[in-house]
Amino acid sequence: MRLGIVVLNWNGKDVTPRCLDSIYRSTYLPDTIVVVDNASIDGSKDVIRKRFPQVVLIENDSNLGFAEGCNIGIRHLLERGFDLVLILNNDAEVDSECLHELDQAAVSYPAAAYASTIYEHGNRGKIWYGGGTISRLTLEARHESRPADGLGLPRPTEFITGCCLLFRSEALKQIGLLDSSFFAYYEDVDWCLRAKAAGSLLLYVPRASVYHEVSHSFRRAGSNEDGSSRFSWAQNRPVVLHLAYRNRILLARKHSKGIIHFLFLLFRCVGRAITHAGLLLLIGQTQRGRAVINGVRNGLRKDPMPPRVQSYL
Image 1 (tube, helix red, strand yellow):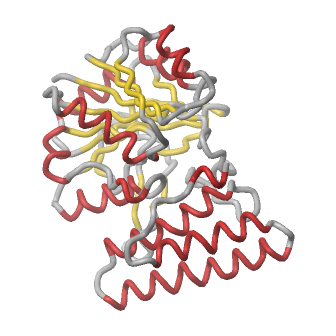
Image 2: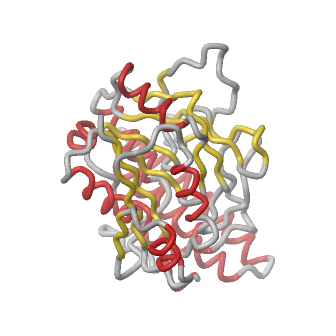
């Protein structure tokens, strides 16, 4: 099966080359690597063009976000008949056997999508993602961090993080691509929920290993003990706070089970936002407090506006 990889670059001069180097050190090489650049201004496009002339470099005129940026690369590969499409964060590095393990799983275990074990880059013994679940009540995704069993065989999972997500092309055509309205964050949760609604199987492949420098682009506050990303109430960048609250509401709009469930999710999100914004404003974190409020306001709009990311940078 033909494998293509999509790597999204946004001002990743210090990380994207390391990501590409790790791919080219693999024992199993992809047929094509597509780097989609989201209007970087740090010179990373020139570095990629010079050091990796063999990759397909697609340059966007503006920052289209993670979801649509990845979609551009995905469409490029689907139009050329690729069987498997892997989206890989530019702040991640694959183990030399990772692509081989994912390819073998795709050959032996039919599924819509596949996940790898993801370790923290700075602490390679700590699992950041080892399969995941999505709460039916809150629609929140959680990373599992338990070690694989002795055999390390693929097993079903409810959630695959967009950090390293291998799609089968037929599944993308059936379920659809990432929802660009999310811009960044929760687009992977949304896709997994759509896959579940379609009756599709998602598999976690323990033997495929990736090392991730968690949230390099927007610099969140690390990870929790369970391996999930930590949204620190006082340390996160304003753009992360805005997108987190905005996209929770978008997710509720799309996947709540009836009006009562939607109202529960809405009041839960708004209640947390009021508390969060109040605490931030109380300690003088005005920009972060406003980001929370604006994120909720944007999510509540009938037609949510694309987040003005540049205003936070």
